[in-house]
Every structure is written in C-alpha cells, then in structure tokens.
Length: 396
Image 1 (cartoon, one colour):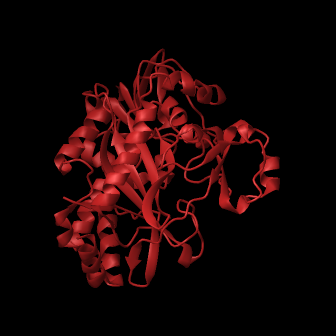
Image 2 (image 1 turned 90 degrees about the vertical axis):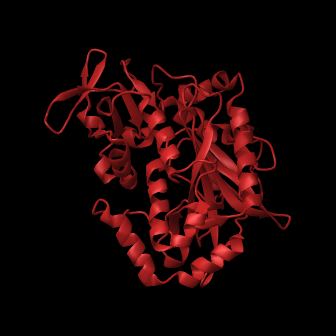
Image 3 (image 1 turned 45 degrees about the vertical axis):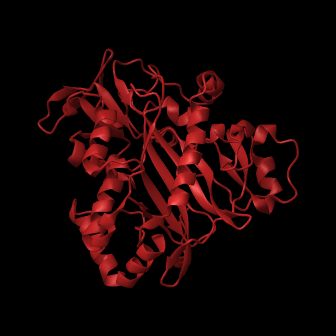
C-alpha cells in the first residue's frame, strides 16, 4: 500500500506545486520557515511503524525505571539545576535513523530528548499537505487512533494544565529570531498562549509576571519552556530579571532539568536491537583504530551543534571535559524515499506527551527529516546534501 501512495505523490508532484505548498504555509503568518521544507511526506509502512513503536517503548521502559532520577542526577551536577522539578518529563522526542542492517530495514536510535519539539507546526503541516494532495486524507501522522481535535486537546492539556491561557507563556530567547518560531506562532494561534522573551520576565518575590499587549502585568502560573541553556549561557548580553535557578512559584510544561536527564547522557546505557554502540568518552579504554566508523558528540548540545562527523584521534585527545562527550558508532542510513531523481535518507522523530497524571508517555505524532547528505540533522551548503523537514504518514 505504501508503494501506491509513493507513486501517487511522485506522479502529482511538480516544482510549481511545491512552491504553492510553501506559499500556503507562508500565508498563515506572512512568514516561511528558515529551515528547508521537504518536498514530500515520508510514507511509513505498518512494519516500520511497529518497529518505531517497539523502539520507543524500549526507551520509555528505561526512563520509567525506579532509579532513573538518582541515576541521572549526575547530569544536573554538570549543568544548571532548576528548582521544583516534577515527577517525570512532559515532553519526549525520540529520534530514529532509518537504517539497513544485514539487508533488513531497521530504525536505530540516534537521540532522545526530554524537551518539546515542533508539536504545533507538524499538525498544521499535515493540513497543508492535504490541501495540495487530497488523497493524503487516507493517511494519518498520528501514532495512536486520534484525530486532530483530540491531538490538540492532549497537547493543550499538557501545556496549560487547566490554567487560563493568559497565565501560561511560551518562553524563549528572542523568539522572533529562532529558526523554530513558526511552531511558536501556531502554538499561540491554536492554543492561545502568549510568546514571551526571557528578557521580558518580571520577578517580584517568588512570582513571575509578563506584560500583555495593553501593558498590564499578568501573573505567570505555568511556563511552556523552549529555552536551550546552551544558547542562554552564550548570551551574556541579555539583561535578565529572572534566573532559572531562582525558586519561583511557577509550574513548568517541560521542566528544564529533563533536558539534561533525558539526553545523550543515557545513550551509553541503552542496550538492544534498536540502539547504537555508544561510549562516554571518559569511559573509553582505548581509541578505536577505525574512527571513520564513529561520530563524536557533545552530551547536551542541540540541533547538531559541536558534532564531529569525521572524527580523528586528535579530536578525541583535544577534548578536555571527556565526561561531556560520547563516541557513537555510525549507522548506515538506508536511502529509502524514492524521489523523481534518486533515493533519499530519512530520520523519524516520534513526538510524545506525558501528562501529569499518566503512568506513561503517549506516542502522538512525528517529525521527519530527509537528506541526501552523510548525516541528517546537520546543515549543508551544497544543494545535493540538503536536509528537509517534513512529516511521516501512516496507513489508518
């Protein structure tokens, strides 16, 4: 069945239609994302979907272990610890490269993040694809048996936790300059919460406030956090009235500590058929002779920052804080998406939400990146090596 949809899409695709699709996205906010838009969805077979679910469940089982918090406390010793942490993460993004092993298609875990992704944008992207390819209504981006209305209800519950939307903010550093700002715009439009820069927070005792469009100070009861500490640490120019280490009377939709607990920090400890050989650099007994088969990654970076794909012995020896880096075996991405002029590699991010009262996260939606390059998730300059953001679609 998936082959049928691929043939249908490729037959209908034209550059003119692709431009109309991009114009449709741009029309919502008079803005086109700065990241490259993939021309096509990724059609995911039932077998691959089941593998992705199984791989996610293996990750979740590890995160749900009774000693997970004590085990990951070290990640907070290395980084800034934020007070009032909740019992579990609110958001979970699990990235799989679509690979080949022994001649068989298999997803391999590339990364896992206790941090929100493009939850609002992806569901709107599905609507845009359907506008231009109506047959895609037969498919769904949702992992579970939900529709768009149910999806948005789950997402709003997780972000707002029953608070009035004016008392919930999406927090970011200069949000208007972020590559992911289109997701912020959709979140504001579809859920109704304001977008606030960290420099706009007003601290009075243990309370935080922001100013609305009328200039009124509004109490903040819950923060949908999109701030990455990597970037915050570099922005010494920012004048802040609030520090994340302050003990303030707010709830977090995505408590910052989970960004560190659920990260590359746990990859060396995940074992199983969907996981890749990964070693903490401080635990590396000897440097492998075949370094061309490895990639060097910082533990807590975001969007591929600091990753060394063609790693050398000198690169490893140059790392001072070896407890902050991992050496990971490269995987063999399978060119799996048939485009009109060749095959393309894919990486699937499963987007999960873990509501406060639930025992486990709910697998909801997905994000897909397509690439002709060696490594997905890194920006390339050459057209032949483009990385494009898109959506995976499943049979109903």
